[in-house]
Length: 241
Image (cartoon, rainbow, N blue to C red; front, side, top):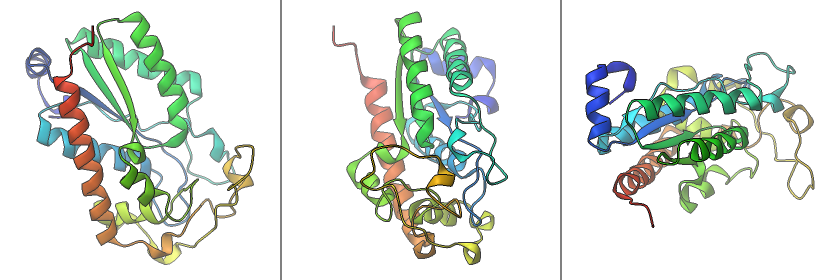
């Protein structure tokens, strides 16, 4: 069920039945010359919806603005929130989810640098609303298998084989394979983290030219299966004390 497509009464019924509220958190940012700016949002949303369709949980409207400060204005297309704004937004959503009767909230994140702001929101919500259980999970951290697939061509990947394969599977009309090019991950072994313009010329890190829709379908199935398992465990879980 999608929160925005059901009635208030249905939202309340789902909460009373113990459903988990699922919040996809994406980004709107440059993804090289070949992928749409909504890549991270699309992956997080489609995975959350596919999993919740199988578990009966409720998917909230996606946060399509993320924390993308590392992309700067070197390329057009990026729309970024500050870390504090994203933290406050997730906190506000969490408070209203709680007000609607939900006691379990899972954030499905599709963008790496959303992790610190969302993590801060989790800490605040846990403190402010002691009966609300919140979990933050990033798509490529759902399993070792998924992490290996995402980082196969670049540990600090961006618009790479995995993301391009997923979009070829999920929404091929938004992908321009003829514009893809490969760039190595130049940050391997370095001490500091770097903004994108200091690490890539094109905005790509990895080998998107090797992407295929078949690989995207296999990876997406793995993501959804892992997320289904997590949501089923979340719904059944009881406090340890």
